[in-house]
Image 1 (tube, rainbow, N blue to C red):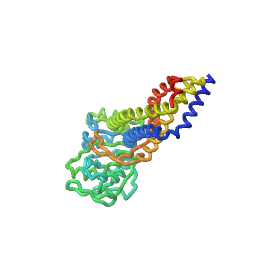
Image 2 (cartoon, rainbow, N blue to C red):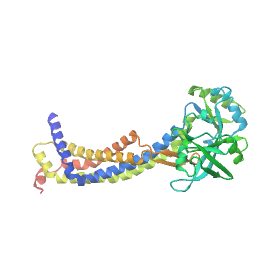
Image 3 (spheres, one colour):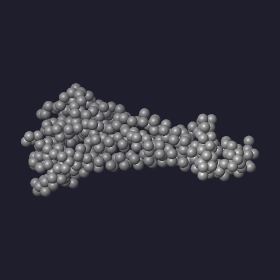
Image 4 (tube, rainbow, N blue to C red):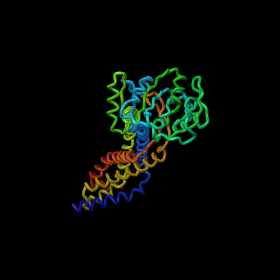
Length: 396
């Protein structure tokens, strides 16, 4: 066993040392594998960024109250009377006598994207005075909070960066209304950063909604009081509502689009990977062909055929690892943190988020590269081990 190990190490070291001498042919495999890794990691970073935006929106100490049967706030409806009843539920956090529950209205307005100029569905949310206390992960980073009872608005940092006319001090026209931007807020990278916030009462009048809302966002005493809060509301005969943890709601919303993006990413990577594997096979066949006399000489001197197989496989894996590392670095430099927006098919509105090239994605890209190298080196390695020694020694 020790003899076989020393043989294998010797041949493998020789193969790896000669890679720079065959850089032109080895480069085909490296570039091909790097390209596949760039595509795989970059596409999956879209799903990772979208999922992170959704997850950052939720808190275990917040609950969403919507109409029973609604799958999103767009299809929900809560009357003003119902909102008042919801504020009486046990388990709610209170500031003195004031329940920390925000009845909110949700509409869509059209604004052009800065990058393309095309119209996009931007969510506008009507809020109340308790909203900042309920959504305690939100802070104003520019300007000031809106004055309730006016046409003033505050916009999320993502919306300000993605859509035209949402800078501090600018005015936005929607229908017959003109809204003035007085502040920009940060929500920790969550979905709210794509939204425009205004006074819910003013928005009700602008869209002739009467005394109605889409949902109530409730701040709980703690995550443990969720069951108490939910059970009281669902047992109340005056209400026809469902109660969901905010974290569960946003996780469900991100599932469909994230799954679609991952499916597309792996599909594209699989198709490109076939080409990269063929590139690796040709590269390793060329390497074996140019060193056939060298391999035959080693075999004639008593080196084991399995040592030759291992050495060729290690060389192929080394080329794949180089390609995987290059691809991962390029994907990180080009896409990590890149800001964009996409459609949330649950609410038919835009969600601004940043691509996220995470360590897990980089590791996945490297593993995929090594798999391509493993497959690409297998057949050339077997051919090297089966080379007829007399014939190979006679090759020029």
